[in-house]
Image (cartoon, rainbow over all chains, first blue to last red; front, side, top):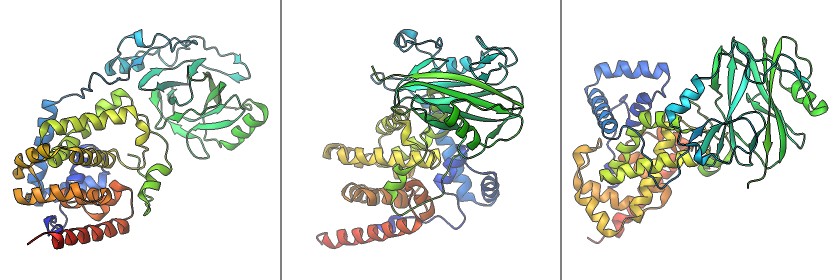
Length: 261
Length: 185
């Protein structure tokens, strides 16, 4: 009796899950084409499609935006001066809405202009140029904010890197922490990944910071050709710095990991 | 959309075993809300049959995603993740509901809103069954009987193999059979 409650869909018909994934933009092109062709000939699915579209529109008209309950904390995106002790005063930094967060991204200086503090000189052992660089956001609890050089972070925080490149290049992000452990933060795998000319493009993963306290250096390596990551990791591990990289530019930032206050 | 097509019979181990945390910040969440929120709401309303409760589930699910982004590890699509999260949230509510609330829901039945076209009596029976069966069976009952999904689709949502879903449905059928046998004539 219980199992008889199921109403089987006719062969080839589109499930609600598939309709939902379609509307959410999660389907591959071939699935969309298959479903579009099916809709042309199936009255049931056409009707269901129209009903779900109408329901969706009605929902968004009634509840156009997510209104999280007021008693719960809501994450904010605030602009940070790239110095230490900026965790203090976040709460008084005001609420930066999503639109403001987007503005933060849009209003950065043009990529051809050097960033504040950037020079074409050697910084430490690494050549730093203004044209291609990495950035990052820090998620601490429920708050998200832009990070900068010498940014204070805490174990358990998440970092999400952004890439700015004025031309198509190959990129990787590596780090060396205070315990001299080398990590590849981006990409996953053994080789660099290609990136188009982009500005502040967020990478598709985040880094959950571990318990190791102290300074951690992070390098964004931008090269004209693909490169293997292992030699860079090995050099970092052995020498604490990157080897010379012809036809590459390197951006370096430092984070300072402190225990939770 | 990130998807990991490696399934195992042990759903729990897969769900928590690996994958990078995916961080959804507030403006991304706003975008996901518009593309996925209607589906969460529709399913929650279908299960709870009270619009206000359904919207609370929407808030609960999205707030949870904002506060604990590590829940979604990019192993499945966002939609299948939200199907699962909605199912869990609704099951919790159904089970925590007092008898009075349950009766209220039963009187709010609107079978015409269901894609499944179950009549009122069938919906009451399903509602009661789901509330009294083991959690894993309740989940699979919702996907199979209420949502009308295929084994493959349920497997994607529950991060299990299709074989495991088949086993769960066999257990579900047996559970239903036992309940019928235990019912007084």
